[in-house]
Length: 60
Image (cartoon, rainbow, N blue to C red; front, side):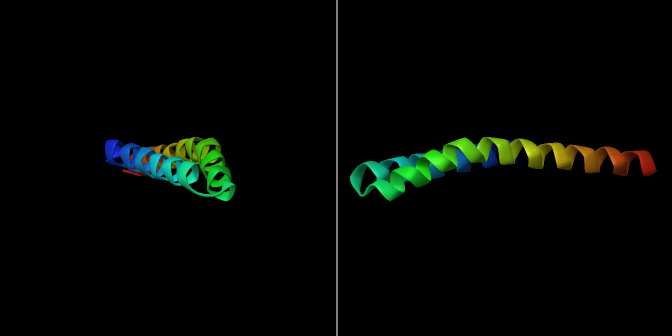
């Protein structure tokens, strides 16, 4: 599942890059923001999932 998420994010980033190169500058800005924000958001989500799983395992 992690590989699927990573490849989906990479594909979306590539699509935004190609679209930004072919069209206006607003797509380039979206690509830059996407590249800077998504890794941080993914790390936060993965950490939260890990914490929830750990708490679930302790309760059992």
